[in-house]
Length: 387
Ligand SMILES: Cc1cc2nc3c(=O)[nH]c(=O)nc-3n(C[C@H](O)[C@H](O)[C@H](O)COP(=O)(O)OP(=O)(O)OC[C@H]3O[C@@H](n4cnc5c(N)ncnc54)[C@H](O)[C@@H]3O)c2cc1C
Image (cartoon, rainbow, N blue to C red; front, side, top):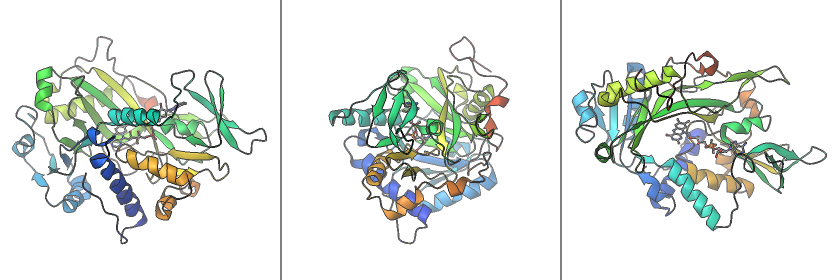
């Protein structure tokens, strides 16, 4: 996580991402709440297809000229302790940044931020009843938002309401197609305590067509593997308009086709784990905006409603900066160039193509539909030891 530096020569988009990267990078490196969760283990950017290599890996290598080029299986294996990478890496080419990059422990960061918020006096209501919002609360004349209603029937009144429910945000308000709930798939493979010691502090290998994995969780010894692809949607007809839109749902299994891709990723990189049973799997939702820039703004028609959503697949790394942006927007002092990029912008989504790849690769090179999934894993039900 190098000190990113926004520059006056940046395009609006470059400035936005460089600025939030600068703000969040500083927090991950120095802030006492966030810095313990940052693991500067190094990062490998890679691809298999020559065209995607040229498109994304070569520019990355130019940006970080001290990166080490990886072409052969021997070079790949040498990036980690002996025995971690045993695969042949067929077609894999990448660049390895040894310093200034790594991963953040997302769950730990949320727990740390929660603990700090509690210490500062924030009161949380959680759980499937009193913590689950079922609708926003409108003023009697329907002209404003004045809080939220939860599943236990309670109404919660507020001067300012922040809608920040990830992919579910789209269920509470007409976002005019600005959000597309999109899901990705991940699984955990359990390691023994001694394996976990070997894998500790390994760099993150990310292949833009295959996926990535990060070192095993310190407590559970499970290694997390994410299957890279343009995402799944769940298109449902809106009963009011008849138009189709993607609607999130929860599932603690993944499509068997995703399991096969994850096992292929393991076969390429760590074949000694390719047949091992999964201990956990999830479909995991996020809200994609049309340009994959976050949506942080006051609602133009309901000024008491602040929107903080549109993670677009990259909302964890900038987490410490997002909070600042939301507060700045609420207090009316958000940097103008940032405000412009993260504004309410339905004009971008008028003819939105729900099937747009949005710059992503992998799987069948298309956005997939959960309704087409023929078979799901049955992890924890005595299956999935092997395909
Ligand atoms: C597999 C996968 C890998 C990813 N990898 C990366 C990565 O490497 N780097 C990166 O930066 N980002 C990554 N992301 C993206 C990142 O996780 C999201 O961008 C980010 O979590 C979005 O944050 P959010 O707060 O908008 O939504 P969420 O994290 O989804 O949080 C929404 C919150 O709202 C709550 N909520 C939802 N509905 C209700 C309701 N009705 N009532 C009350 N509460 C509700 C939820 O419980 C949740 O706590 C990844 C995402 C996935 C799926």
